[in-house]
Amino acid sequence: MKLDVYVMRHGETEANLRQILMGRGDSPFTAAGRMQPAQVARHLRDRRLACIYSSPMERARRTAALVVESLGEPIPIREEVAIAEVDAGDFTGLSFQEVRRRIPDGVILGEFRYPGGESWAEVQARAVDFVKGLSARHPGAAVLLVTHAGVIAGLVAEYLGEPIEKYVRTRFGHDFLGRLDLEGAAIVGYEKLAGTVDSWI
Image 1 (cartoon, rainbow, N blue to C red):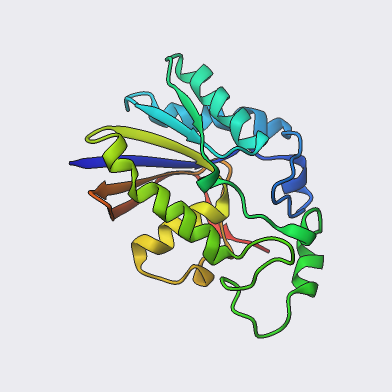
Image 2: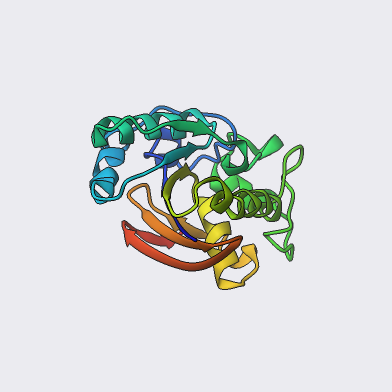
């Protein structure tokens, strides 16, 4: 039985604006970040959601709560560590420019493990495993994931059959909404429904 898995990124934060690698840290919303969840939620008004799964990062939990408030329906929110932001370890809080300086030349970005943290390949593996198990929890239904750009990149790469390093620099905007189609434990479709997709500077 098919399952629709909608995916969105959390609202924009001050650290996003300053191009800071937050990892498992947090940062306040910008003015735009406070409005984006409601803007994305407009595209979900005619789609009955069985559940919202949120990354445990505070910026994602705030976003999920604003989506529920905007939709005006009692949709349960469950925190899920499998769709959490990458653990950036010792690189947490560094600017993107400094991160690029510290990553050795010639490394495969998907396999590079942040010192004291994890790699993007590990992020992808945990997110994909979680999503592939959703059909058994919500057969024939629809759910929403409120997560992070790197997690979304990993899920899209899995659908396309590509390694995560091809998408590490893909930026799914804070206004982004996509849909993954699941049949059993397989991601069989992907569609961007709204928002911006570009590349990190």
